[in-house]
Each structure stands twice: as C-alpha cells, then as structure tokens.
Amino acid sequence: MKIQDKHYHTIWIKEGNNKIIQVIDQRKLPFQFEIFDIETVEDAFFSIKEMVVRGAPLIGVTAAYGMYVALLNFEGDDVGKYIIERAEYLKSSRPTAVNLAFAVDEMVEFILKEKLNIDLIQLTLEKTNSLKEEEITFGDKIGEFGFEIIKNIYKKKGETVNILTHCNAGWLACIDWGTATAPIYKAHLYGIPIHVWVDETRPRNQGARLTAFELGEENVPHTVIPDNTGGHLMQHGMVDVVIVGSDRTTITGDVANKIGTYLKALAAKDNNVPFYVALPSSTFDWKIEDGISGIPIEQRDPTEVSEIEGWDGGKVQTVRLVPEKSKVANYGFDVTPARLVTGLITERGVCEANKKSILKLFPEKI
Ligand code: MRU
Image 1 (tube, protein in one colour):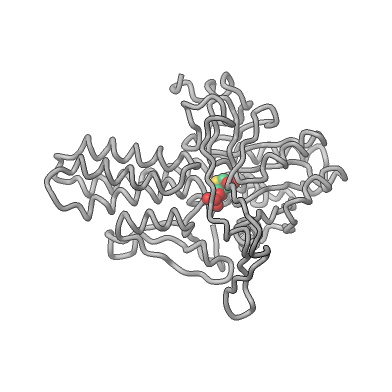
Image 2 (cartoon, protein in one colour):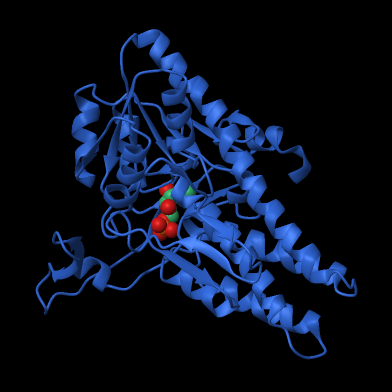
C-alpha cells in the first residue's frame, strides 16, 4: 500500500545488501517516517518486543527474517543446536500472536532439513521470502472474500457502508493489504462508498496513529473515535459491520485480539451488528480449544497506560496521565468467545466461528 503515493511493504531486504533486513519503524508513525535495520537476531527480537514492528502477520515474517540473520551470523560447528536455541529466544519476544511461533517453527524445520546443503543461506533467504509473499497473497484473498460482505451490505442499504474497526489490523500490521483493512481497501478500490470508524485503541493508540494514517494515505474516508464510542454508534444505526483482526484464533473460533475487542463484540451482538474477524491461516492456533483459558495474554509496561505520547508540532513528547501513586494494569489483548463472532474471513473463504466450519476450509488440519 502507499505512503505519500509511494508503494511500500512493511519489511524488505535492503537494496544491494541481502544481509540487512529493513522495516518501517512503527514507533514513530504517523509523525516521522524512519527505517529500522535488522542485522542480527537480537535486532529482530528488539524490533518485535519494542513494537518497531507489530501486528501478528508482520511479527511472524520479521521473526522468519530474524532466523535468517541468525544463520548469517552463525559461528561454530553445531548449526542445529544454535538454531533451536535462537528460535526459543525469538519466540520469547511476545506471547500472544501465534504467527511468531508458526513462522519460527517453520524456519527451524526448514533449516534443520537443509543444514548440510552448501546453499543453506541462500535457500533460507528464499524460504523467508516465500513466507512473506504468502502473507501478501493471504491479505489479497481475505480482501476479496471480505469485499463480498461489504458489497452485500451496500446492495441492501444503497448508501455509504459504515465499518468499525479496532486496533491496527491494516497493511502496517501485515506486509501489504492487511487483514481487517483488506476488505476495506478492496471496497474502496471497487467503488463502494464506505466510511470507517477507527477506534483509537488505548494505550498504544494503534487505531489513532496507524490505522488512521494508512487509511488517510489511501484516501479512505474515516473518523477516529475514543474506544468507548462504538456502542453508542451501534445503538443509533451508525455501524453496519464490525471487522477486526486477530492475534490468535483457536480451532473452535475464540478470537484473541487487541484489548477492547471483546467489548465491541458484546455491543455488536446487543445491536444485531455483524461482527467479523479477518485472519490468515497463520493466525490459527490449531491446538488450543478454549481461548479464554488457553491463550496467553501479554501484560505490557505500565508506563504505556500511565503516560501518553504525542506530537507537539516539532517533536514527539511524552506526558504523564495518571497520579504517581496509582497502580496501573496493562493487558495487551482479550478473547472474544466464538459465540459473538458472525464469521471468520480467511484466505480460503468465510466460515463460521466453530471447529466444524473452520476445518471444512482447512481439512488438512483434521
Ligand atoms: O500489540 P500489537 O500492535 O502487535 O497488536 C496486534 C494488532 O495489531 C491487533 O491486535 C490486530 O487487530 C491483529 S494483528 C493483524
């Protein structure tokens, strides 16, 4: 997708130097556009943990490139042992997005299989590139399937379709297109009039800072709202559909996503507003049955809540919001039970949020 009319992916190999991986530094957006270099597995760990990169699909692909740079820097005689150890280190960077473990495990399996091949480094790079390309294709397909949902609402309504989204499940969270935003971009591209309600998404404000930024760069009409506004809008018929992303979805259809998603799903249910979750297959956890007890929920630094960061017109400033003496809790994600989810939009089509329907789309996982 575009930034100032130039097409970008969120991650790429540096031109002329395939030992350096470059990413857009999302800590600085929308105020500053900066590129961050990943040359070591420690750089990859830092970029995931500190949210230079974020969003489940991008975390997965960054981790895959992290394994590639780990291999580049290998010195010693037991590459297998080294790779397994670096994989565990990378996987410990953030707990909730399952794409991280998915991508790292896939890379470990590949490297162990090819470890005696003299072209191991080149083959590993190609494998990583193919994971990246796969995520782009997933976003594109999710966009096409999700577009049909928006088109059908438009056919019935005959006027602008209002879509509410939470957090940033946009192209910045992926490589291109996004998950929740892919149907939005397709609808805009194919001429359906749409308007997006963007939850600001405290505490890190991924909605206000990132989703609003990317929709703006693509000229998609949108309005940023405080997180608590969605229920009111739904009661007044101002939301036609909710589309969110996911960081991990169980085989039974329970959805972990950015904190606050569950409350949107409750409000949507109470107001008969369809609530869809857009996700690639790399975000399914095929092992966990119960999302609430089974999905690990990240708790982040309390200063993300007690302080707020913004642009003062010349530089980024951080100010305190909460009294010094007050305790602060910062749960990064919550789980929306499958019963509140109208449907899952995947790269293979739309299914119901239950095991039978999910496995019908992904029979190889039975
Ligand atoms: O903590 P983040 O910014 O990495 O959060 C992840 C997300 O971007 C959201 O939860 C998103 O809705 C799902 S990822 C496509």
